[in-house]
Image (tube, rainbow over all chains, first blue to last red; front, side):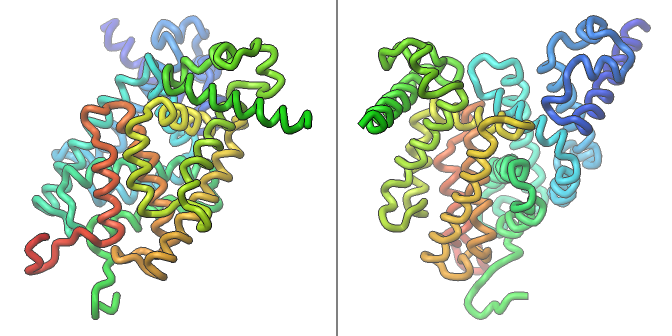
Length: 197
Length: 197
């Protein structure tokens, strides 16, 4: 019972953090601001999440769970949902900024979020490869195997986010991602005499 | 004369910082460690670079100048050099880690490296598009225009770096980048009856 209440409280805090991140971005999402939003003292918040990094990792895990929940039984990212996910991300710069900033920090030595991201990417690559195999078999129309395409798909999503966060007026993130999907799935080709659509 | 000496000193400091970064990574590259390497007091170093971020930006600018210097008159990234550049990067995790960590930080509000990265990416996209146009004309074999391909090429390089830094045993960064180049330039295709290479 106490455990269930504690879990519920953690969920409240994560949701409050998501709201604060959406409104104020990575830097504005201080432990103090989140504690205030959820009606706790900062000391009380530290009982649930001992550091800002620990709280942010919980927020990103919750986002991943939510973003992949549409995939139902297939347990993972569906290719036709990725396009919509990138569109959706383009409307929530606060959480994308938080993800990108924490990812950047995580590659430095001994960072507390390193294990989360390492594990996350291993899982994302595996899920994407499985989904690509279900959809295209052993080779995608563009010529790559699912295992070759998965890290590229992931890399394009992450890399575009940095360019878009830095210069949203110059980088149309959803359009660029659709270009990549076409390349990968062979929907856009210039062949001799193909003439285009 | 004093100006020339000052420029020379700045150059020494940037080279020393590069060495320290290569040996100790992003976190180990403190202003104190760099000052010691170049035989200055930390106070003396601050005269040339007031913050660690300012020094790191100078290091990354120097790296960009160096990495593109092989391009000669074309003033920019050459596509056939990008492959070698990624191979080269796979042998210098310290500087790639520094680039990736600082890029992550730069997307947060008011970060001092934000202007550097924003400008850098605008220039990199422009240079890449020009090089792709010289090589392929208005449309690449994979079907994209040079302006569509440039942000994707950049995004793949950056995104793969994060996956590789986090898990070098699982991600073969140069091989993955070559897969992407093939996709972009149409060297790998499965067509009806093509039968492979």
